Amino acid sequence: MAVTAGEPGKGDDDLTGVLRHVALNTLAATRARTVNSQETREFLEIGLDLLRQDLLEHTGPDMDGAERSRLFESVSRERILKRAEQVDTNQTRLLSDTMFRRRWQHKNRYTEDLIAYLFRLDPQYRHLETMEAAAEQLVRTVSFGDLVRTLAAQEMQLTANDPLLALQSILQAALPRHPRVREFVTAQYELLLPRWAGLYERVALAYGLRIRTGLTWMDMALLFNAVIDGTLIRARIDGNAPALSDGSGVLSAAIMAMVPSLLDPPTSDVDQLFASPSGTRENTGM
Image (cartoon, rainbow, N blue to C red; front, side, top):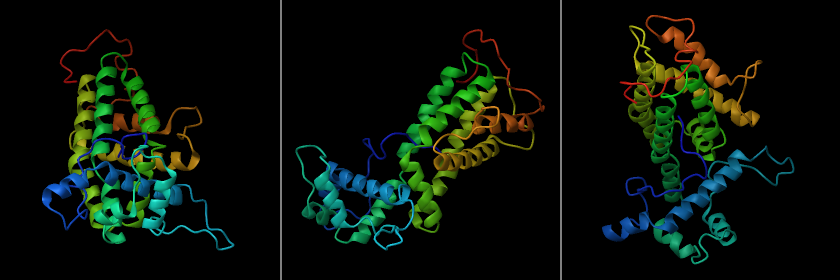
């Protein structure tokens, strides 16, 4: 699924239910403040940045034995504090060893919270809301084919170079049985995909399209999600969105190829539906 683009982790997410191991030996009110403090967020952001450096930018082992990348070995307290000295976080605050130890008595606890922070859902919800808003505007003015191509291009632009998404993909493959990873995958299928399915249904109905008997909008969301995931992997490797020989984007082309077979009655060409916009459509639900 897609998540918000740009710098990972920025925002005002409430981390109270996300971080389970911060300041365990303090009063509840103190712990709540510490969990959502700027220092806590900065420690976690530094950890994500180190993972990005070691996992996403690592090109292979140094055959002389000087450099290697192992999951979470790179995210030591010493490296975090050294990076904190190099990064001017706010010009008014220096992260210290005392601050770190006050939050996480053991490095493993920090690692667990770092995984939880990486797999929080708020960025995905923000991305979904962005795509819902974009679809609401497009459905009023453009053909169905143009809407698919525009939204697919926006999806790739927002997600292909998002390091947060890339790190999630790596750790899902590396730690498939980790409880927080499994919670994240379950939430995607039980909470996020139904929202995407609802968006696809509203868009389709706005163009007079109906799902084929025996299928559901969740089925469509599952199919689209699989195509998006595969296209993102290729885009990260190639450095740009993959395209067909005619120059069209793989994501939009795959969606346009699948849609006719998912409709009732089937149609051979949905590209030019409402090719000549005539203002805002009525009763679209968008």
